[in-house]
Image 1 (spheres, rainbow, N blue to C red):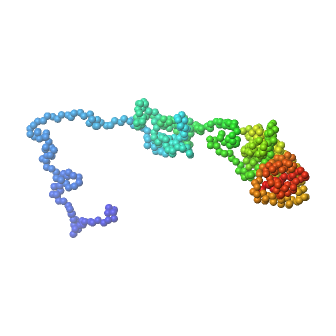
Image 2 (image 1 turned 90 degrees about the vertical axis):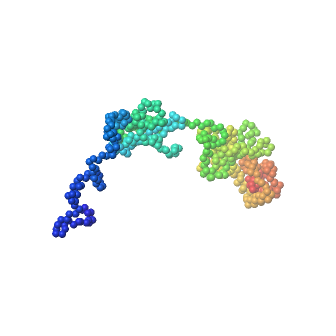
Image 3 (image 1 turned 120 degrees about the vertical axis):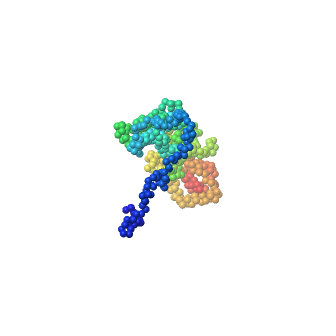
Length: 514
């Protein structure tokens, strides 16, 4: 519908009497007048044609026409001088590049988003601080460009800049004039490059030089294998092992022990520049804390004066260390005190590679203990040693336990006899009451007990019977300044007496151990 849904006005075509109406029609005279006019414009109001004798202004004022109208003859016109530039502009432009039959658009549409991936290594170990680093080489089939990216490992100490060579076409060889042209200011184009890198230049197991760096291609992905198989028929893609071989293990030679410090502690200096203390058995230390086995030992020496010296050997169960103490003896000419500090004592014949130390099972009555070149003979032990070994009989050999039992058998028999005799005479209760009274009196007078008094009495008891004669007994009492003149002490001595010349010193010493 030309009205497009809108109404438009219609003029009447028939008048009164059904006669045709002529509206806006030109007469014949008007038509003839219009036929003589020649329009000059396509649009706009029509203009009347100029008269026949009309001469345009550019012709009327032409110099040549004017001179000829005045009767002056002019020479014929001369030709213009030849201009090479103008003639060159009139010629078509010359094409310096031979048109290629290769369709780059078809290549882009065919291989768009198809990338060959190669795994390569850059060996820069020849230079100072150089190393062997892994890289990824991407070859874009759409435009034959190459990109090299670095593979970062965790904690490799390098900044996160993965791109080594940005995506670009890489030249393989240049023309001869490139040998002297400064490359630092050269913008590489097709005129300077003789050959570009293509797909044929990349192969697994072969090196390739990209912008002066030599990369060794050792593997590729599955898409790359399939592409080379379909394009070139290559099926041999052997993975090259480029992992750095572990260096040969150099055997560590431990230097000989120089005798300073503990063997385990000194050995840590051979393993690290910052040695750590050796590990300790804390469970054993907590279970055996303050548990000490004490033995009386004598020095084995050809000198008779040395053989008279007596020592107290202490074995600490928490750390398996041994210390030796010499009780001072008046007028002996030898200064007593610490003879050996706490340390582990190796057995004779043990080496630094496999050290073997003394244990409680090795300390039997009559055994010889060699301590750093000095030989000691065990002559006596504390009664706590026997009680401890009997309570842990499964941890000690039977021979060690039996030797202690045989050694303490006469002493225990004598103690039992003394106890039975004292119980038959005055009774055990009277003795205990007297011991308590002596201890209270000593505390009232601020008496300080001597820890070496018991060891001195044991030292003079050669047979271990628990009895001493009166001369030795009173000599020891004078040595330790015991108040033997006191009435309670005299009564205690009388209760501890056995026979005419023997005195049991166990209960007596117990009274002074306050």
